[in-house]
Each structure stands twice: as structure tokens, then as C-alpha cells.
Amino acid sequence: MNSPEKRELILRCALSLIIEHGIHGTSVPDVARRAGVAAGTIYQFFQSKEQLIDTLYQELKTSMGAALLRGYDADLPYEERFRLIWKNLFFHFVEHPDEFRFLTRYVDSPIINETTRRGTDEYKPIRKLLREARRSGAIRNLNSEITLALLYGSVISLADLHLRGTPIRGKVLEETIRSCWDAVRGSAQHQ
Image (tube, rainbow, N blue to C red; front, side, top):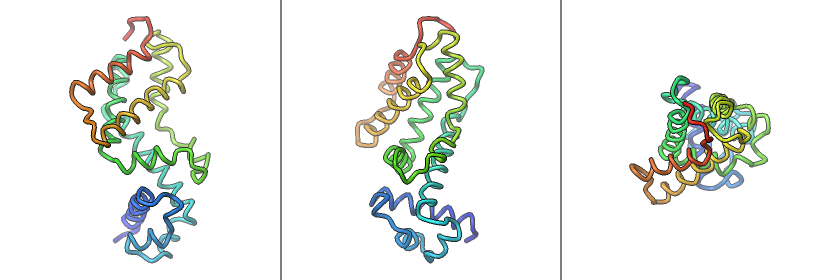
């Protein structure tokens, strides 16, 4: 196994152990055992458990950011872009439940350093969309952080419901997205 594969295996094993036992219940030797490598091998890639977790957080946020923008076209009408981003995030979380659980549980953990938390740029195109839509009157004149909270919060809640056994798909999914759009939609009929 080459170094990038080994590094990826270590990160995946750390993720599964953290989901099972929590950050404080997961040790470097646990990760090494699960990955089938010596504990020293982990330190070839990460200086500490904290750096391992920080890197995991950063990579999962980057993956989420890429998923958010799958199929994104800045020329689409605002509502269509909003719907696409909402669906992309929802399906990313549903298709990657461990990543979803990690990101939602540990977003505010003191073990994730503030530079990493702020350093990911996954929301940059979304913030741009929100600014443009707000200026045009297509969405309410709310701070982008508030609009993002409405968007992100609804996706998190519904992905969690879905993962706990309440199916969110088809008509229910479409009505939910429409309700979220209606919550932020402005009075102007701009595209």
C-alpha cells in the first residue's frame, strides 16, 4: 500500500472510530489497530491525534464543498441554484452518514482549531450567490450567515430525520426544498 492510500486508510479508520467512540474515546493506538498499521506509521502522517482529527475535519469539509457545487451553473436562476445546492448537500449527507455525523457533532469541538474551521472555502460560491440574490431582491435582505444557517440547518435536520428512518424523498423532498426557498425568497420576481 502506498503512502497516500495508507494516509486515507488512517483517516477513514479514525472517522469510523470517532463515530463509534467519540473523539475522547478514540486513541492513536486504536486507529493504528483498526488500520492495521503500527502507531508510529500514523505519526509519519500526523504529528498528533489533534492534527489527525483536524486534518480529517478539513478533508471532510473540502469533500462537502465539492459535493455542494456538483452541477452548479452560475447562469441558472437563483431559485434553481438554491435548489441544486440544497439537494447536493442533502444527498451528500445521506450518502455519507459517518461524515455527516462527524461534521455535525464536532463542528464546535475545541479540538478542531479555529484556523481549520474558518479556512475551508466551501461556502464561497454560495455566499456569492446569496449576495447577488439579495442585491437583486430575489431573496430577503438577511445577513448571508443567517441565510446560510437557514439553508444548512434545514438540510442537517432533514438528513438526520432521513438517516433515522423517516424517508425524505420524492414529493416530500421537493416540498421541503420549496418551503426552504420560500423562507428566504424576497418579494422581487428576479431570476
